[in-house]
Each structure stands twice: as C-alpha cells, then as structure tokens.
Length: 443
Image (cartoon, rainbow, N blue to C red; front, side):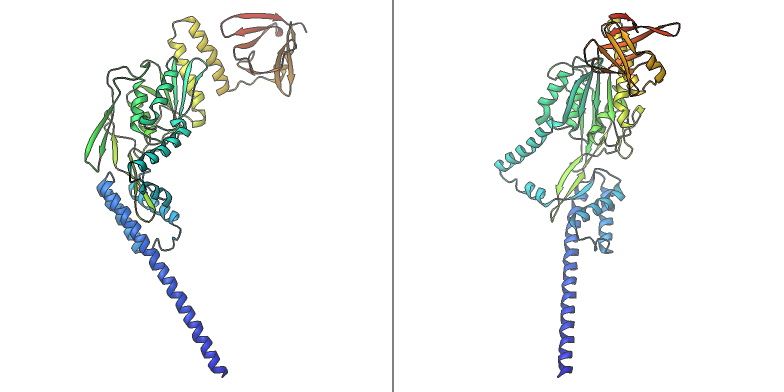
C-alpha cells in the first residue's frame, strides 16, 4: 500500500512539473511572438519612412537577427525592450533622433482621434501643455548695458506660439545687442526658426535651409519672411549660447546663423541631430520617433548630423552667458561713437569682467580702507569690506580693482579709494551717469 501511495505521489509531482514547464514554454512562445509582431511593425515603419533606405534595411536586419538568435528572449519589460531596440537601431544608424518608445496610453490617445471633435480636443490638450511652458519662451529681459536676453527652451510651432514670439521679439527690439540662450533647447519647429530669424534681418529674403523628405521624395526650402509684426533688428549683434544638450531645431538655428555670419556662437558643441521627423504608432503599445528628412544647408551643402555645431568660442556652458555679455559689451564699447554710450558700456563691462574673473585684494589693504569718510562708513567683517551711509543699511563691496569696488544692492554706484604717500586719504563716489563726489577720510 505504501509503494502504491509513493508511486502516486511521484506521478503527481511529474505531472505538476510537466504542466509548469509547458506553461513556461507557452509564456516564452507568447512573448517571442509579441516581440516578433513589434519588431515587424517597427521594421515596416523604418523601411517606409527612414531618411536613408539602405540604413533602414540594415537596421531591420539587425533587429530580426537579434530576435532569431534569442537576444531579446530575456527581456520581459516592454520599456526595457524599447530601450534595447533603440540601442540596436542607433548602433547602425548613429541617429540620435531615432528612438523606440513604449507608451500604450499615448498610442491609444492618438488612435482615439477619429472625428473632428476628437481632433479639436486632442489639439486643445496639446496647446494647453504648450501654454504651461509659455510656448518655450522661458525668460526675456534687459541685461546691464542694454543687452537683450532670451532664454528659449523650445522652437514651438508659430501657429500656436507665434503671438508669444512676436511679443518677445518686440520687447527686445530696442536693445543694443541680443543674447539667445539655447543651452536647454532640445529642438522643435523649423517654422519658428524662420520667424525668429526674420527679426534679425531686413525685409529682403535670406535663404536659411533646405530639406529633403524621403517619404514623398521631395525638397523644400526655408527663407526669412517678407513681413513680420513690429520692428526688425538687422544690425544688432547676436550671440547664441549652446551646450551639449542643444539639439535638432536649436542646432539648425545655430548652424544657420553661424554659416550666414549673423551670430557669434558661445558655449559647447551641440548634440548632433539634423534629421527631422516625428512619431509613428507601431503595434502592441509601441511607437517610433522616425527621422524622415535631412537638412541641407545652402552655404555648406551639408549639415551637423553626428558632429554637432561647433561654437566660435568654446567654453563650459555654465560660463557662456557671462562671456557673451563681456563679448557684447566689448564690441559695443569699441564701436560706440557717443561718449555717454561708451561710458555706459564700459561701466557694465568692468563689472562683468570682475564677476567672470574675481579680483583678489589682500586683507591688509581692505583693512586700510576702513574708517569714516564724512557720512560714509567702511568696516571690515569676516574677510569682507562693507559700506554704509549714515544710519542706512550695510552693503558688501566687491572689488573691481585694487582700489575700486561695486556696492551690492546699489548697481548705479561704486567706490574708489584715493591714496597719497601710501596712505588712504579719501573715498570717491562714482555714478553710472559719470558724476563723481569725494569725501576725505576722518579716521
């Protein structure tokens, strides 16, 4: 009886093992089939749309061979599969635009746009997202020396962003130089490039770029616009800030202006993506961002794909703005014919240079400046020199030279210490309108 029971237990165990093993095989078979469906759909998209057909064929072969050899078998997470497919496709194409995305919710949202009302609601959601980012126009302001500054995070379609772009360019239209910051700009629409660039030229058309589109086998061109709302600034010096994050349309803007000799580029070499395109739905919740065109610059007859755009002045991206301000002020000072304007540029230039390369003044010299100068009082605390007038608040001083200082919180005013026979005898107040006053040292 015990032998019979043992046999039954062994047989039951074998059946359980066999069932579990069969289930695992079925799961693996199902996974492989799903991966094959995904790869086949991605391959079809690439062969129909990717800008270089021969490269598309090589990428498809790479995916299918990897699938056949079981290289994707261990990948259960579809997001990891998307990452691996992107890696494999880029190993052949070296195209940083090209990527596989797993996002079933986004795929379904795109599929759900069937009626006119669906389309309107879809676009409303998209426009609302753009509004929350102010259509890419992160910051616009006037820096010291009447230098315009635009921090542009994206080139969004002027169909939606045009009003914001026009308002921004007109706000900056009375500046003497313009800095356009693309260090955090990942790309966008060539039409916004066209609009913004048009403000930097006169009404005569300027050829900006050419594009080849593989799906339709057609060529297009972009030129500056014959009309813009408000004031153009064809003579203002332009400085474009770049980083290794600067990509795609932001690179086109930089590349165009560099080769047209319209701007000075300052910063880091850009990312290297010159193939425009867009997202196409694949199967099983996957999408492909597929580059379907390529830029062909009319000056170089080439583009920046894989190489990036090299700036005129290479510097760490976190130093690019400071250096651009210095270069702009140096240029404006050199060209200035009005003594008042030149004084204003030099006033700002001296401050920018001191911030870029701080001046070191020995503590013994700083201590020699302490004391009373009429209502002006100078004190030394924690290694720093401080100024106050009468019963007013204290202001920290930052050296511009061994004897001249900026006053924190009072940008229009500075102090210069005067000495005779190596003894400090007076302090001179300097103002940004050229006025001066002087107080003798009392003690």
